[in-house]
Length: 131
Image 1 (tube, rainbow, N blue to C red):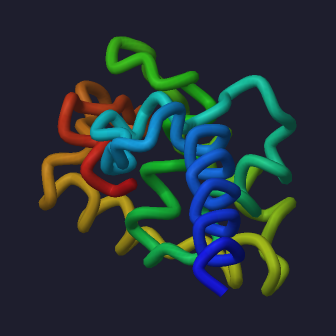
Image 2: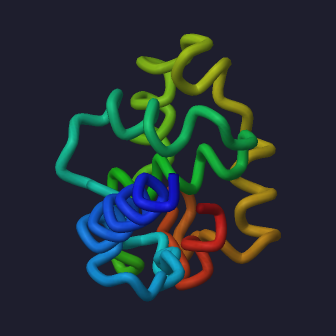
Image 3: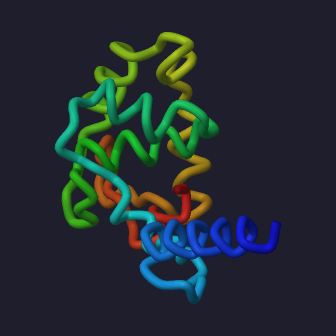
């Protein structure tokens, strides 16, 4: 019986070494920079489904803006372009409804976006907090 237990312990150690790299368990580190997880190279519908669909309206607005600007805080995006993209993805599985101008105001109030000129929006450095 002890021989079987010793054999099982050796097998477990081999498996642990294979999975964790050694018998000393290292805690799995969660990535702190959420931006590294965002992939702007995928198409817009896949981006929305992956990163945006489960968020609130203002956060959806910010993340759609981030997609269109590819995360560039210096790039201005026209509100009409945002509304156009939004209207193409109003379905429940994607953005979940029509665009509401409240989203832009709340995103500005939270400091996630800015509007340097009328009808255009850009990200601020705070936009990553919506992730």
